[in-house]
Image (tube, rainbow, N blue to C red; front, side, top):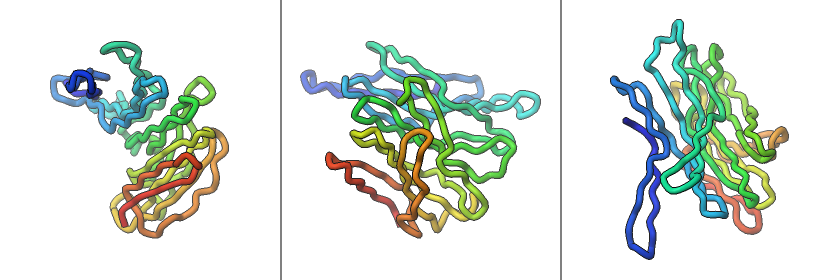
Length: 220
């Protein structure tokens, strides 16, 4: 079996406890759950975004599903897992590298990469949120030849509910460097045009302080 594990350290007992969030299995190991990203609601409840994949099938006639999963802890050793987005790992399709954040109203924001099935191998930057109550997704940046979205992104959300995303693009999927670091902000359906923060920046991270000032770090 493979899957995602959540752990908590309790000061009163000076001990760690662990729980299985989502577990998958296949005789040949073709199913997997990876790329976990964790945040904690104001109530202390943990939430996790992760990538689920199943490559046990041939691409024809049955595709190989890949999905963005979201988990919320509903009780002791109990998690509710739902699917936010779906693709397949055939004909260039993919979903990868989710990054999750929670705003001051306990609404969840996720940034991740998605490649269109049958499309060019360019990657899109996609944003998902449950701010309206139901999950909704939108493409924030469309990868094109010469500006392919890399598998590195980070998201945070201010107390005002605005999402802030930093992400890297590169010339193509086969050229790792240089990477252009870009920034965008907004709410569902209304994101700003991405601006360039650095002509050479990868592996980004972003945070927002109490004054809603943005702070980033990245590798050049």
